Length: 139
Image 1 (spheres, one colour):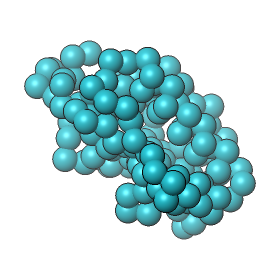
Image 2 (cartoon, helix red, strand yellow):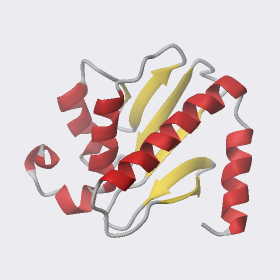
Image 3 (cartoon, rainbow, N blue to C red):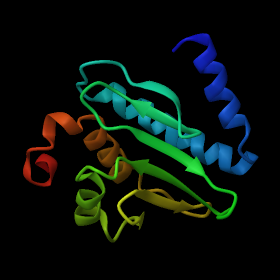
């Protein structure tokens, strides 16, 4: 990541309220940790897209994370809505997560996040174009 991009990303995280910032930084770290454990054709790049922290990788589908002031007790991880990702996550983890239509997974500040299940969702997104032809994305 170039210096200007690093500054933009850091500035974005600093703009969040402290408690939310910690939650989003935890999601960020989970994306980074998952990306290091799976076979990817390139390194995940973090940037700002639609004024939200975004993670992209060749062969994968973007992941974004954000908090909105109109829902101050919630934050979310968003996935490309034109994919089968969220529909697949609903099929697998409907009892585990709350969903924002076909956009993403929504958390509240009091949630204990099901990290193993969320890591699986992240992994599917980061490998999406390699597995999109498989039923349930190869699960």
